[in-house]
Image 1: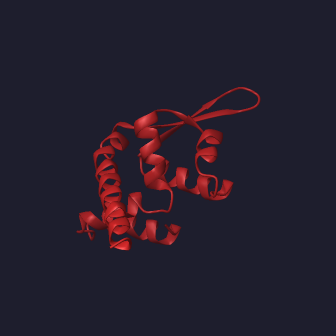
Image 2: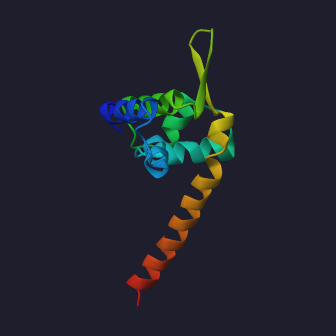
Length: 124
């Protein structure tokens, strides 16, 4: 999500001008990779940056960094840096992030069901 839109939503919340809970939720989880990042952290636990990058072969370093930063800014994930060489950085869900896992699971289930329907429609 663009930084401008994220800033606009935060400003609306601070000014009590934001009344759409659905828009808020979507602003937090929208992004090409955020839902799958959340799924992996929620179901597999802590991951290092390089592990996440290997999971998504088509994601650029910059895109993964941006998606993780946004999730961290929103309090959904936490980033732990270990003072060593080379640097070791781990990502995990916060308590708030854990509350999104049932939503992510529902999205996954819906997508699985819809994919099966599409396959059936294709062969009918």
